Amino acid sequence: MANRHEEALRKSLNDPEGFWGEVAEDLIWTKKWDRVLDDTNAPFYRWFTGGECNTCYNALDRHVEEGRGDQAALIYDSPITGKKAKFTYTELRDKVALFAGALRAQGVGKGDRVIIYMPMVPEAAVAMLACARLGAVHSVVFGGFAANELAVRIDDAKPKAIVSASCGIEPGRVIAYKPLLDGAIDLATHKPSACIVLQRDECRAELKAGRDIDWNEAAAAAEPAECVPVAATDPLYILYTSGTTGQPKGVVRDNGGHMVALKWSMKSVYGMDPGDVFWAASDVGWVVGHSYIVYAPLLQGCTTILFEGKPVGTPDAGVFWRIIAEHGVRAMFTAPTAFRAIKRDDPKGEFVGKYDLSKFETLFLAGERTDPDTLHWAEDILKVPVIDHWWQTETGWPIAANCMGLDPYPVKAGSPTKAVPGWDVRVVDENCEEVKRGDIGAIVCKLPLPPGTLPTLWNADQRYMDAYLTEFPGYYKTADAGFMDEDGYLYIMARTDDIINVAGHRLSTGGMEEVLAHHPDVAECAVIGVADQLKGELPVGFLVLKAGVEKPAADIVREVVAMVRDKIGPVAAFKQATVVKRLPKTRSGKILRGTMKKIADNQEYKPPATIDDPDILGEIDEALQGIGYSKARS
Ligand code: COA
Ligand code: AMP
Image (tube, rainbow, N blue to C red; front, top):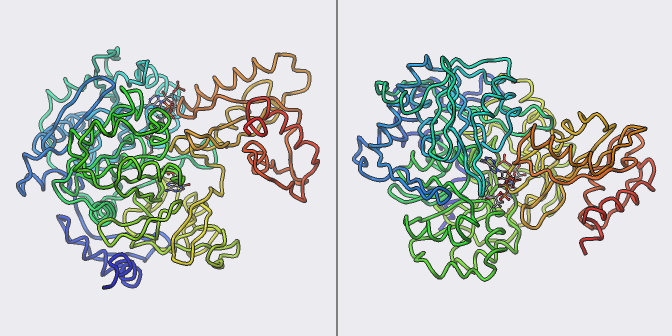
């Protein structure tokens, strides 16, 4: 019998309108589309033009109306606070409708932006869905970003309102969000007219009269709001992600294509049926949280888990297994770094034996490449398929995966398997010619991209073109490099830009360099990502000081570390820098970051023929050994 993955892939590429048009019948539309795929303004392709829908209706109300009202929609499990809560579909719909009413009372309506800066509490999902209900556009900002990053997003999205909480909780410390929020609003040129703040028991925030409103008071005074129909092509959210500069890219997601693709992926990629319990251990601030904590599981009528904790230390390396057992999780999704953290604390996987994991069927990993060691370790201790899959904030759902709802292929360690239906993935050289199987090249996807992917960047059509569509005409540039083997399995090996992946978090080294360059004693700098056993990569800075600086190098390093934490946030995990006399460059002045990375990782390297002065590499090597890298690693 033909493989269902292969068949679906073929159909989706030969007849995208037929394929996605049929899938879309599974959703509820207030007005049916005129065209499934609209190419009238290519390369700005649009899906389901003329159609009208409401994402929140499809995620909540329809399930209540179809008899799923008493099923748990969302389970909040917070080992870090010791709290748990369960919301049925009816309860969640009512909470969302009420909060949508609270937002509407602040003047928020269709098309208005709302920034959500919240920790992992159920209210974060409620706020997202409430925006969707009103046709407002949410933009969630991850709690580990500093005030400055929040300010940049406020100025770009120009929100009418901001929804926040009094604090987030990290192991050993409570992070007051309100001073960060106030600081960001002070820094930003655009001022929101209202801030709705959830007061948490762990730390209460002082509210500013006239601007800030207590979440509970706002909800208590509100009338529930109904779902507002929006155009399928209207934006559902903006999610900012690292670009190659300090200015993040505002990835736009539409309503129609997004709900179609996500619901389809829930069954086809993740194998989940309505009523199943699905858990993505990520954060609502990342795309994984948007797609697979909030929207996809709810669109599919599953129960989703919102986890506020860490894979280790809250309280131990058994917390994932406790949650799987307690809530009957059928599949979970997290980043490989979480498994490396568990392996470090419990190398033999002894905690697994304490829990009943009989309902658990599949582990999905993404955010970074799953290294074969981690893959085999997870397979050994869990005895279930471990599925590496590859995607990006821009795509919103997987580009390559072993599709558990179709006919899965044998797993090959180090590969996220094959292109998912909808995706025409090619590996090309700099002339956009396909390379031989097994050869490394740039990974691109033929246009049009399937539904649910970014139609553009927020208010930045030209940047969208420049960043993704210009270098390889007719293709979307993923900015990942890798190869395809003889069987069509993809291997994602590296980024082709300055993005690094720290604990599954996407960060721009260029953005960090912009911060370092502002130190008054720094003449020139470079940041590279060096290999790290736990987090995958860690940023390391190189500083060339201005002539005549007498301040001790250690003080300057301490200051730049504090600057990055203050300007970008703790999530950057920028803790190491070293002072060098010069940076290695090509004769045309390009800093040789790739060579520096190879030295740091103690890998073989050949100085490029265009290097200006090869002796500098020895100095870099010495500086790296001084902070525990290069030969100091072996
Ligand atoms: N708000 C405020 N600060 C935050 C934060 C948040 N939401 N999330 C992280 N931070 C802080 C951390 O406290 C830490 O601060 P520190 O430098 O004072 O220790 C810093 O940001 C770095 O955080 P993180 O990268 O998460 O490292 P960690 O050492 O705290 O934990 C792991 C390491 C592997 C346990 C953790 O990264 C993890 O659970 N990863 C799971 C993968 C994941 O969620 N990926 C997302 C995409 S799927
Ligand atoms: P983000 O936008 O934060 O999801 O990060 C996307 C980037 O993370 C991709 O472009 C890849 O570089 C990397 N990435 C995500 N998943 C994988 C994976 N399964 N294998 C290799 N790299 C991955």
